[in-house]
Image 1: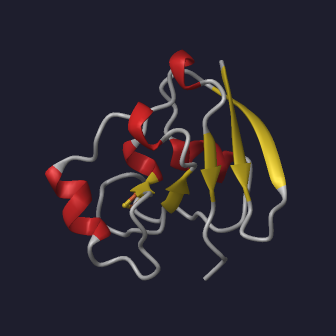
Image 2: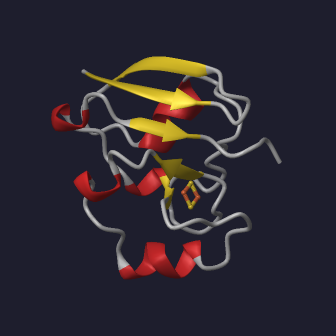
Length: 105
Ligand code: FES
């Protein structure tokens, strides 16, 4: 289990215990957090798992793949710290990760 924090667009934080290798998207969907849907189930084809990685963690995550970067280019509200939650596996060394959720669509 790794403890990660999701912060709603409104600023409300949620501390979640995530299973090892669960994705950031799965952690949000399982816990019914607003702002992340994961409509394609992690197949990298919907972009509804878009989120913002806290500045302190951006360089500590594996970099996005070419496919993830291509998908992110089409995401409304994209920022330099944007990622797709389905592409980030939660591992024990990500304990403390902070993810900022976009506003609900
Ligand atoms: S869940 Fe569809 S791209 Fe991540």
